[in-house]
Image (cartoon, protein in one colour):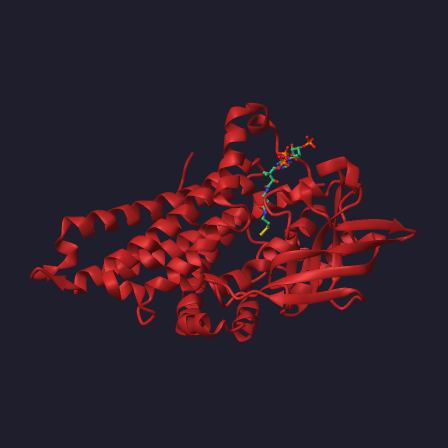
Length: 391
Ligand code: COS
């Protein structure tokens, strides 16, 4: 049975997230964007009311929410400000490998660290020469006794300057391609970890993006997440779990732009009538509404598959691809509806257009989502395969 009815609990959480987005996030969003302000206070408030670490299971101090409920939260927070939202939600990406493949000790220590205090973690996969091509990474982890020594550099790391620990991917068998990669938890304070350049970005300026370098960093062997050389699959399974949330955030951005454009079109008068009376504008508004709705449906489907323990690789990429591209289109059209005013920072929509761009880039570009979709469609073996077990 297909049922789009939310439970009372889901509706309550959705409403709480909306209130938080409206009262705490929106009121500062445009100012934070201007100055690239780090939203520390909002992170602490969100942590306090339970809007962070939503997928950490109860035994490690989290609320253990299902993925659909997580998406409801992400849409509302994305509606408020996706830059601040990215800062709030990044722990979900960093901790997913630990939830999936970490030992009991690792889970207790590192998931517990985030639920006991408003701390942050970052996911370190991307490198200057290895973005879409994950297995092209150069970071090395060499086993020495009961430790691994990590050397390498990771770029575009969300929350990198503020994280207390990193989930870091490195080659443990460089000749084995994607079958020679492992994941580790690395604490920021350890010798050899350096937080380098903070990026000055086009959009989502309230989120922090930095380069993190690892120079002869000694990592205890027990900090490996999952099995040695199984890191690539762990990263892919992580992204299957987190892309629905990114899609939800993109839906939130698109919805915000749609709402601003709709209201403006009713107020702005040209040729003697509100521009909403002109079919040229009506068709843009209609397309925006459809894109928001369709993006949300794909997002909910991808999250629901996860919640029922099914493999969601295909639908997760459908959702991320469609919602991200739609956010870019809807925000661009919102600027168009505002006309020249849309291009001016005094009005709200140019920020949304800048913020939307990264949705087509991070956690897998729209081209990578299409590549995943094409492979899943053309190689049914993958699509029919059961959900892979945790690494
Ligand atoms: N779940 C589990 N296993 C998966 C998987 C998934 N979703 N996707 C791929 N695999 C497995 C494959 O089954 C294959 O297994 P075997 O070793 O048993 O053959 C292995 O992983 C390699 O898969 P594939 O051949 O598809 O790897 P590619 O190198 O061609 O890369 C893409 C695949 C491009 C999809 C991957 O590198 C990717 O997602 N890139 C984008 C990375 C990204 O999102 N970066 C953003 C960083 S986070 S902000």
